[in-house]
Amino acid sequence: MARPVYCDICGRLYSSSYVGAHKRLAHRMDKSAADRIVALFKGLSIDERKKVLEKLTSITQPGA
Image 1 (spheres, rainbow, N blue to C red):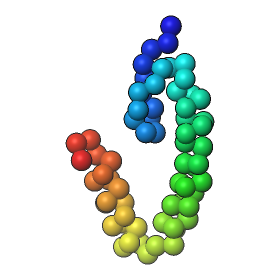
Image 2 (image 1 turned 120 degrees about the vertical axis):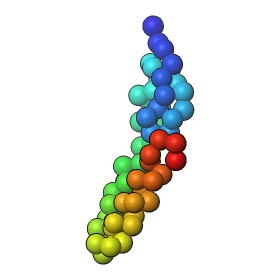
Image 3 (image 1 turned 60 degrees about the vertical axis):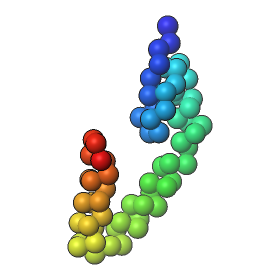
Image 4 (image 1 turned 45 degrees about the vertical axis):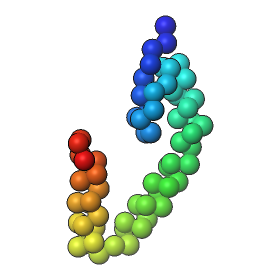
């Protein structure tokens, strides 16, 4: 029996039988966006990388 689960990418609630299709359809471009972000990150200086990592850490912490 299908149960409600959250998409680990966008956080929306879906049926467990549909969440896989949702990820393929709704988030198919996310990988290329992530690749572009990594490429930009590689072009930063060490100090700039540290600042970006601090900002990312602060927004990904629970309760942020």
